[in-house]
Amino acid sequence: MLDGGAVRQGWWLVVDEEDGPGRIVAGPFADRAEAGWSTGALERGARPVHGIRRADGALAPRPSPQEWAWLAHLGEQLDRLPEDWDAGLPDDDALGTLVVEVAAALCEAGLSLYDATGAGSEAGGVCLVPERDLGGIVVSWRQHDRMSVEQVHGPAADAAVQQVVNRALADVLALRGFAVDPLGGACVVRAAG
Image 1 (cartoon, one colour):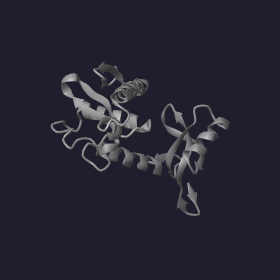
Image 2 (cartoon, helix red, strand yellow):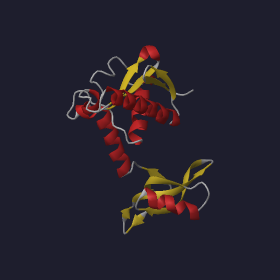
Image 3 (tube, helix red, strand yellow):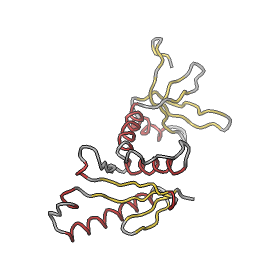
Image 4 (cartoon, one colour):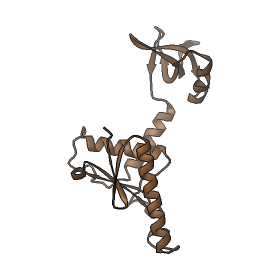
């Protein structure tokens, strides 16, 4: 869309077409929330998409500023994994893809990955250990040093919290569609299906 000679980028409401790209039905909107609220008054099946309206009226999808920020956050979280976690894995390996998908699901739930060697390692977080022999990722919780190392609340509290949070991690990942199997106090996560 041209606005005084300038192309407009933003959030648009799009309805998918059977024979090609989606058709723009409204927009641009300042943010995804505004576009989402507008779907109720429009055609059934309208969905918000970020991009630029081309001269022919079609939408050229583009990552939104929020998507770029999310990808940067996910990259920072993946950088917390041990340096050699993907040694020997080809770029298209299913296990590497699974690690990224599981990390994304956990980060979307508001959980941080554990960084064993970085600043703030005492804070704990989710541990992800890809295990080819198990065909998945071992997922467990690492508590703050106050609970796990110093045990300021005692070993019973440490063990109970560890058990509860590990169970919660398994539940979150199962709800997100992963196959989750118990492994000791942790769990093994695999792609569903």
